[in-house]
Length: 164
Image (cartoon, rainbow, N blue to C red; front, side):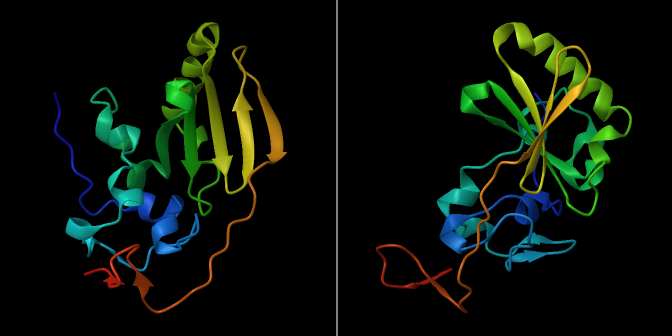
């Protein structure tokens, strides 16, 4: 099995929201450092530590699927019945590049018999890939998420600022 590490990728640090950090989706986390990765990785909150993109988990995905190279983060949802493709808003068509589109459409075709969906997320807007090769634009289906910005966060229950 391939052992992979996030390294300096950091696309989840931009694309995925983290409630413990009051970090909304599609904005860079204040703890991410370009070329270095997360500066608080060893003490990151559970919302970060529990997340793993499919590139980390699936050795069948080549290096071109690494999120900072592909322009999107793949992650499963609903107990594996949904493949979420979270696009970087700066690259809304990244999923359409080769080999990504063909593979994603193949997953939609093959997974449909088992009730699996492939969802393409462009911010709050969602496309669902159809088994026959088309797609449905489901429109804006995610609520807007905004957090109040503050300089330091409190680690829940600790009485201390986060990070340590």
